[in-house]
Amino acid sequence: MGIDYEFAPGPSRLSKRDEMIEHTGQKLYPAIEFEDGTWYREDSKDMEKTIRDGKLMERARGTAPATSG
Image (cartoon, rainbow, N blue to C red; front, side):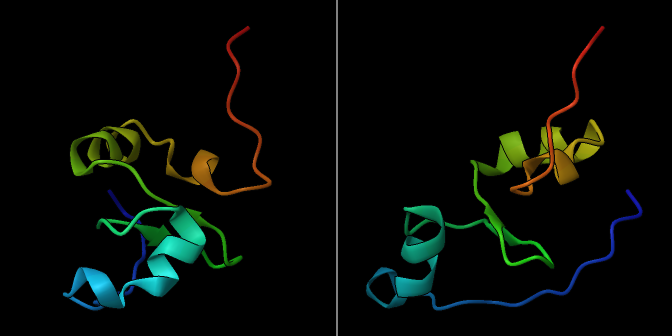
C-alpha cells in the first residue's frame, strides 16, 4: 500500500505490555504508533480494511476524519 513503516516487536507476555495499555487501553496486538506519538489499535481485520481503504492517517489523533459531502 506504499506506507513506510518500521517493525518494532514488543513483549510477547501480556504481563509485560505496560506501554500498550498506557497508549491503547488494551494488551492486545496489533497496534500502530504514528510519528507524532499517537497510537491506533483495532482488530487486525479492521486495521487491514482501514489501511486498504486509504484511511490510516485519519486514525492519527489530531487528523480530522474524512467527511462525505
